[in-house]
Amino acid sequence: MSAAAAETDVSLRRRSNSLNGNHTNGVAIDGTLDNNNRRVGDTNTHMDISAKKTDNGYANGVGGGGWRSKASFTTWTARDIVYVVRHHWIPCMFAAGLLFFMGVEYTLQMIPARSEPFDLGFVVTRSLNRVLASSPDLNTVLAALNTVFVGMQTTYIVWTWLVEGRARATIAALFMFTCRGILGYSTQLPLPQDFLGSGVDFPVGNVSFFLFFSGHVAGSMIASLDMRRMQRLRLAMVFDILNVLQSIRLLGTRGHYTIDLAVGVGAGILFDSLAGKYEEMMSKRHLGTGFSLISKDSLVN
Image (tube, rainbow, N blue to C red; front, side, top):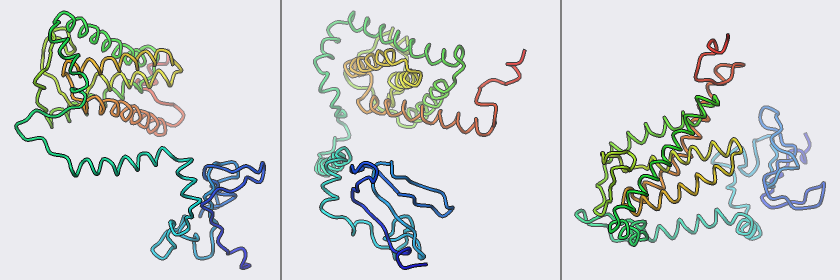
């Protein structure tokens, strides 16, 4: 083997594409083979972080690793840093956010044990809370409309399974509400002092409920994500708008803390993803038959 063949070829900077002379923006591992001789990159991918294997493993720590390998950051140049800031500004913003909130967290005065929790959403919706407190009829109407929206979410999610035969949204909702029950019981947050209840609000009848996290918001997210998968984009947009209005109302009535609503959004996305992974796992387990919540025998006349 010649010395040239064993030589390291590692590039962390942009490189011109030999096909069009333009710079690439993603990862390109030109004709590189892994340990199983499988191609792991081509010239049409977007960044140019390439590595060629030598007799002693991957050069400069790319791919092979190990404490004896040269650290990746030692190969960075000022041009690389400028490129990252220009073309990957979103992660850079999050890095700045990390530093900012580290400063906020370590200098913040903690809320005393006997004081009401501080909630920024409550501060923003303080005027709405006053309006609803002085207008019980308006509060009742908005609560009723919110209950209708919850019914719309539930109907759509169940419909996708019972009528369309797609179980992902239903499975996601089952995962989500079970997890919500566990977390809601594990940490029972105090009801906000200015809470405005209604007998027609869901759950109907002024019954107790878990504050963490919002099942209203999470259920709407699950339905909206399914609509997007099925290219029902306008319906998904309607649900997203109603979800925002629902969140504002819940803050105004002190029905949920801001963190309940934020986690509700994340929970909807998370459990929709987990339901998709569950479907994929079950489909692989039953090769050739696909995924279904009912027996295949019942589909045979």
